[in-house]
Amino acid sequence: MAPRGGFSSRIGFIAAAAGSAVGLGNIWGFPFEVGEGGGAAFVVIYLMFCFILCFPVMATEIAIGRKTQKNPVGAFTALGYKNWNWVGKLGILAGILILSFYNVIAGWAFGYIFEMAAGHFGGGEQFGAYTLKIFKVGGYGLAFMATTALVVSRGISGGIEKAAKMLMPTLVVMMLGMVIYSLTLPNAMDGIRFYLVPDFSKINAGVVYNAMGQAFFSLSLGMGALITYGSYVNKKENIVSAAALITLADVGIAVIAGLMIFPLIGFMSGGTMEGAAGGPGLIFVTLPTIFGTLGSIGPLVGTLFFVLLCFAALTSTVSLLEVPVAYAVDELKIRRSRAVWIVAGIIFVIGIPSLLGFGYSDFFSTAFTTYKEGGTDTDFLSFIASVANDSILPLGGCMIAFFAAHVWKKHNLDDELAEGSPNYKGSFVQKYLNFAISYLAPFVLGVVFVLTVLFKFFGISLF
Ligand code: PHE
Image (cartoon, rainbow, N blue to C red; front, side, top):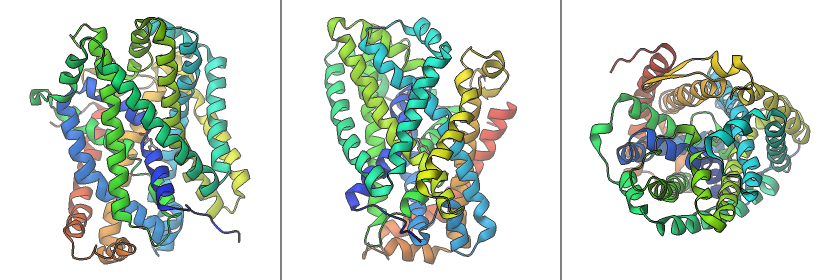
């Protein structure tokens, strides 16, 4: 059998895993969730979830992957628990669903590079008309999926690692440049205040579920993406410190995205922060309107912004595609180069209803219902996002943690985490991780899963 390949260095693995985590979730999702969740109070809850709950789950996923050197389905089987591999299958399903709609948004962002360069800053009306041009946006989506497939087809060190090592540092530099620029605008500080000074009266159950879902999605957890990347990591790697760095990088980029966007909203709203709760349209509607007010520098700033959004999205779509591809390669014994294009093609087709749900098809725009604070969502993309991000990911995370602690057993997890980390055993981190994986994560994630499903799909709110 051909060797499975792997990351060639520690930094390559961290760049790729951080690249998976950093994506639309940070730059598009996080600011709009902060805006809808009332600002800084959301940020505080989000940070708590990331470090207290998500970081241990991340270390566990990577450990399972490295131990077994397998995709999420094969991993459970390799540990001797074939009857648990449905968790892996659920993860692969989530990955396919997420990539199907994620690619639609990434395709829009890709097209917006050209819209911005051409100085088209028409806000909501323009965005509405843009999403209706099905062949145009479909073409951008297809181009994005093909780019993703190209990277994945080159394999782990030659494709995924190389792309991430180049794209991630560029992303950080571009974002910092944008932050400095945003902070110089009038009323920038009103944006910062909204973003960083918490008002805890704004917290309710819905905000807490969203913070949880956002943390999981943003850190690429609960579906085996990090089991898969972990399977390409060598035994010398210190998993715990890598997971900590990846979490920090992801949170750091989300925080920077906020520093970039809220001052812009402060500037545009004259300090009232009206428009901060712009929802998913924040990036495609509010920001271009702001770029339009910047005069001659507008097209440049706008183009840069969407280029960096595409960079961030690409390292995430690559990891999303790698999960079903690794499954096809390991379990179905399909050649990587072939598996990549078949899987990418299928997922593109699955994404078509998401593409059509922005007014082009009445059915896909209105026939689906999920409940949210103060109303309902109706289009297919939002529906699928609720199914995958808000439901399957927490369930997957709950099952992975429960499995690792109580089925595979804590001491086996400890042994794997101690490889490459000689001081791990007996440390405080070990004790905390054990507690989090055995009790905290299964319980909190299980409860959040049940409450979210009741609320989002049945409109039943227990709190
Ligand atoms: N974490 C990515 C983002 O924030 C999305 C993602 C989710 C990627 C799950 C892989 C797995 O954009």
